[in-house]
Length: 249
Image (cartoon, rainbow, N blue to C red; front, side, top):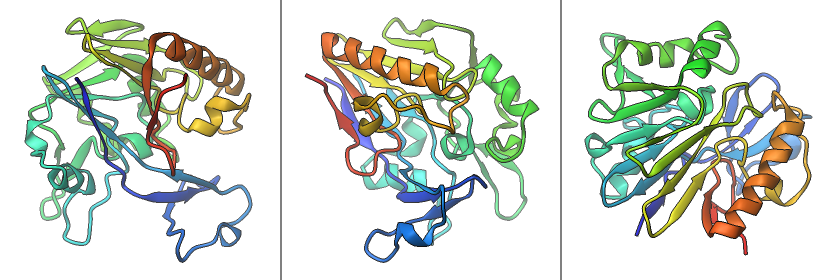
C-alpha cells in the first residue's frame, strides 16, 4: 500500500507579479494583499511504494531559518533522508513547482541537483519552453542543470515508468504540463499538478485566467474527476490550503 506524505512549505499569496508572499492566516488578511491575489498552498508530495520513494514536484526552493532547503527539512521531519528519494516526477517547471529542483551553494554559488541519487523525469517540450520563457513564471537558473545530468530522463508525450507510474501530457495550465498516475496494484494515486490543484476547482466548472488554456484545464479536471471516481483514485492537491488529498465517491 502506498504511503502519502504532504510536504507543505506553507501558504502564500501570489499576484500578477508572480511573487510568492508567505501568508499566516492568524496574522495576515487577504484584504491587505491587493486585488487579484490568490491564496495557495505550496505542497509537494512524497509517495512511498514497495519499489520507490517518489517526490512529486519540488516546491519553491526556499531555505529555512537554519539555511536548510525547506523541502529537505520537511523530508527529514518525516523520517526520510533526502538522499533516499529515488524518483522526482515533475508536472511542469513553473518556479513554485521547480524551485527545489536544484540548490545553490551559499559559499561558491554553484548549483547542484537537490536529489542527486534520484532520477528526475521532465517533459522535453516543457523544458524547452521554460528555457525560452525565462522570467516571471520560469527561472532558468533553477532548472539549467536538468539537460546536463545523467540522472534526468526526458519524457515525450504519454508513457510509463517501470510499468506502474503512468504519465500523460495534458497541456492546459501551461502548454506542456503533464500529470502522473501511480498504480502499485493496491492503490491508484493521481497527481494533477496545476491542472487539478485544489478540490474547489474540481467541483466547479471554473476557467482560470492564469492558465495557458483555461477551458482545456476545466475540461481536464472534469475528465480526471470522473476517471478517479470510477477507478478509486486518491487525488493529491498541490495548492489546496485545507485538503491535501481526497477521493471522489
